[in-house]
Amino acid sequence: MTSSNDPAHQPGGFGLQPNGRPRPLSPHLQVWRWHVTMLGSILHRVSGGALSVGALLVVGWLLALAFGPDAYGTFVSLAGSPLGLLVWFGLTLALTYHLASGIRHLIWDAGSGLEPRTASTLTTASIVAAVVVALAFWAFLFATGRVSL
Amino acid sequence: MSRVAKAYRNGVKVSERHGAGEWTAERLSSLIVVPLTLWGLWSAASLSGGGYDAALAWFSSWINSGLLILTLLVSVWHMNMGLKVIVDDYLHKPTTRTVVLGLIGLACLVLAAASVFFIVRLALGSAPLPAGFGA
Image (cartoon, rainbow over all chains, first blue to last red; front, side, top):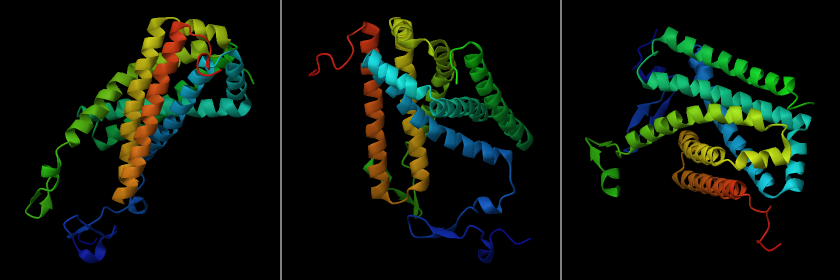
């Protein structure tokens, strides 16, 4: 085990501060033991990015609706195609995960659940909850005949 | 702002003192958007497969239209802050970052304005576009 402040053993290398002083950088992903909270954090960012695209599609839906029945028909045939449904399912999963994970972050921000074991449990729970809710949502859509392949 | 931005104490840059505001805005928008997301999922389920007329009927309720405007405005605000965090993490060149953040901000403004415009028209039962816009 090397001393953490030994300059020869800074796994992340060095960066310059705005005032020109060298400072050790945090080691990056490859030197950390894997934690589920890392996956949770990455998925939170990825799902947030995906939802930005989702926002464009929702406004696209509003646009099609405002342009009348013909435009709406075109939108629905695209959105209801197998590829379209796959995209909407992915966005549903992104939404349920970002929601569950966001609630987890709010719990942490309130100062609770920060012990490593609890934090990991919360993260696993948010992933499982997201998958379960997204699947249940689409099972409901198919079961009630709102959507079909 | 430029007065504090250039402040150094013992050779270390002093906080520009707006970080707490951004943090609070992120949490506030999250708290607002949590119940709205659940309502949005429920609305999406009730609208899907219903067709054009059912969608128009849904928008004719000002509760639905109002909540959807609120949902989209707060979501776009939240999205803008989230994308800013990503850009701040990965883009280090100040000019690139400023340009990308500017474009994202512009896109968010367009999304917000378009949402309100379309939803208000749908709620009022206006004739399909491009009525009165040159058609």
